[in-house]
Amino acid sequence: MKQNRVLVCGAGSIGKRHINNLVKLGAEVSVWRNRKGLLDEINRTYAVRTCKDLKAGIAAADAVVIATATDKHMSIAIDTLQAGRALFIEKPLSSAWTGMENLLKLGKDKIVEVGCQLRVHPSLVVLTEMLSKGKGGPPLTYRLVMGHRLDAWRPG
Image (tube, rainbow, N blue to C red; front, side):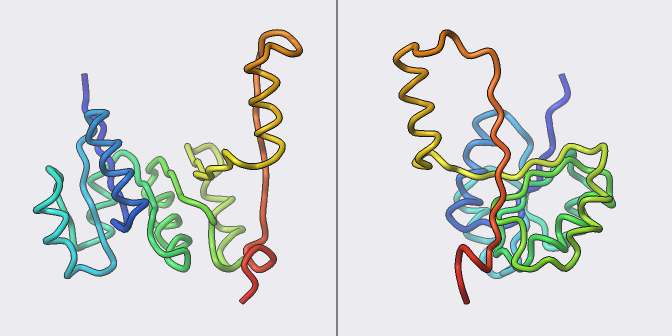
């Protein structure tokens, strides 16, 4: 069975969680950081490869996880989709609307996911309670689609 090659972009707290999870799942993980001086720490801490050239890292991967600073998300996502790779991008999707139309166009018919943990969102708390108590019968399916405007969520 082919091992999945995943490039994790960013290695702050969220990036490190992705690295740990992917290694445990048996993926072949490589890591790119905008702050290249911190790659040595990654090499000492994890059994992964590091790369200094983002485009080369994307080209060598099957999928890319973006867990960098938000203002870097869009350019990395576009490079990833132009290379035809699957994409998982942490929320928020971007710090600006610039490039969003291009991202939507490039992402059509490709695997694109946005990570968003909403465990304490009031609607999901109620849904969890209902499901755990068996109210309404067994769930057949569930899908949540949600959006936020970063400028309204975090003014300034």
